[in-house]
Image (cartoon, rainbow, N blue to C red; front, side, top):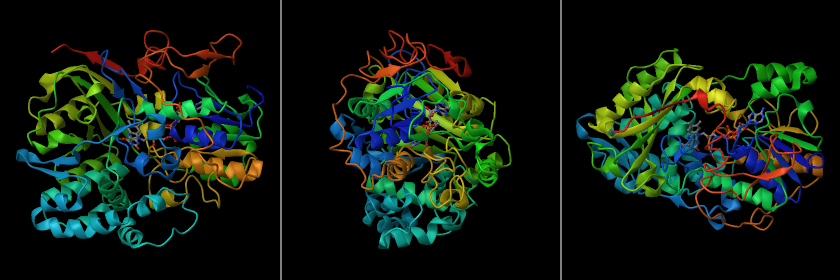
Length: 542
Ligand SMILES: Cc1cc2nc3c(=O)[nH]c(=O)nc-3n(C[C@H](O)[C@H](O)[C@H](O)COP(=O)(O)OP(=O)(O)OC[C@H]3O[C@@H](n4cnc5c(N)ncnc54)[C@H](O)[C@@H]3O)c2cc1C
């Protein structure tokens, strides 16, 4: 394959793989080149703490994958991927053992919100009734007006506003907390638009598709895409960082799952000044500090319903979360941060040994921060779940600087690969008719720095691949992902047994020949994690 691929894809995050899947389904020979020791980018699962504890290294909750038009066509279920749904989609604990709780039903969720029940129903019911309409419009290239629907009209009315503006509809701590918790995913101050849009999208997805985890770990989704690429004759090579376009094998099409900053570095002076300036002016958001825990039991949330939740938003009421996010935007590390928590074992108990649990948590920090927020994250969990720290068997922490060291797409630790301001949502990374096309012939950007932005939905990759198919290969019809690819379900846990994935790396004899990738007992990603010294693991037997 090296040297005779129709298309080369740099980066094997969900967007790089979605691009490769789309191109392979069209019958092209695809070569994926990944810098890290293992594939998957923001969609991986590893034993970060102790043997048998399988942690999602990055993404854990998958409303966007379920709602994504790409994954709906790809058909993860037919390829052996199971989404595991918790009973409570997400919870927002408050002091004194109270909590707001979101379930799949708008009516049931509203019923628990007291005097805000009607306002919640009025906000969410039209979006929920619209089914996929809002997600289809948001998970698009943003180039054409979406097809009109009542749900979309309701969404569009509020989406460009700030969460603070929409919070005025609610009176109770519970309803206002729910809004703040969902809006803060935007990594923007809650007074800044379009934080309301993010809250409404994620809030409505809770009712339309849920926020599941992937049974066995997010890495299973990556495995399914790699199986499809390799089954169609493609190749995935790991451990090869691309510093310049000149390093790449010659191919009619090149798709880059990289940040605008990395693209600039790869191309040097080859880009026209105007486009170069636009990429140089692309703004990145704050970073995150993430902690994964191995626990001796479930988290003892004071609120019973919170114990059933897949995702939890911590940080108190609307004003407290707004203050924490505003502090991060000012370059400060809040003492009482907004903390996102996923307890995967609630829906997928096999993530940890019997009666043990994993816990995934992160908070926002200023860009490039080297501050270890473990103690502040733990204090926030302890606030709503007294006794939590007694359960900690081991913890693994990555600061924002370490996030970037592990994956250069996360510039300064920004896991969204670019601030989600209104301008940068609508035109990422530069104002262009086709945001995936670059001024270099046959070269496309396909990372989450392109529309529709961050999340595991694969749409940036799919839409970039469709542009390349049209421009370079004259293929106008989107390929049939169900029929155009083999779909053999994988057996056994991802990366914990000998892989059937053919990986070619520089270490393999001959430089580019395929070799079999072994699991943790051999030389797989668990053993060979790139720059493992960049993160901290502390193990304490309790
Ligand atoms: C801690 C964390 C939690 C998250 N939680 C969620 C969640 O719960 N749900 C959700 O939907 N999303 C979540 N996300 C966001 C989601 O993971 C990303 O938006 C998504 O992975 C972006 O996909 P991508 O393919 O554009 O980039 P990435 O997944 O970042 O992949 C890019 C890949 O390209 C490789 N690469 C970059 N530069 C080069 C180079 N020069 N040469 C070779 N290879 C290169 C990188 O090593 C990486 O493997 C989370 C992210 C993080 C980090």
